[in-house]
Length: 104
Image 1 (cartoon, rainbow, N blue to C red):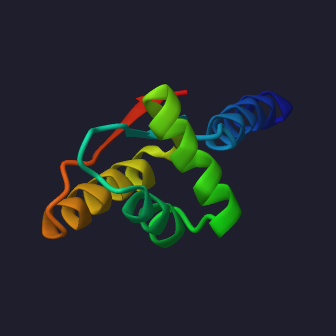
Image 2 (image 1 turned 30 degrees about the vertical axis):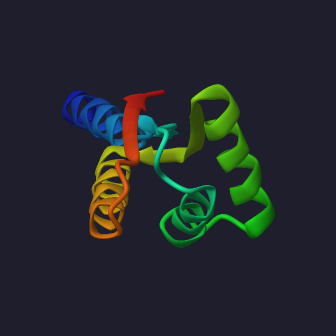
């Protein structure tokens, strides 16, 4: 009887360890262009990424001066959704703003 219990216990422990793994995170970036206004980038950061005005301004200045700004780390599905929302809002407002994601 203990032999069966031991096998079962190992199987349960193995499954539990696999379930506790954190999902991979993805970095979401905004890319600079010559047409999107700084104000719109700040609005996107506040609306889509829930950043404060101060943090949004800091990220926007990185986008403007360095060509790219990190918006946050998210699971794949959330990152993909945020990228799609940014592209949709930019298109509706007539801006070519690009948003990308890459595995952390």
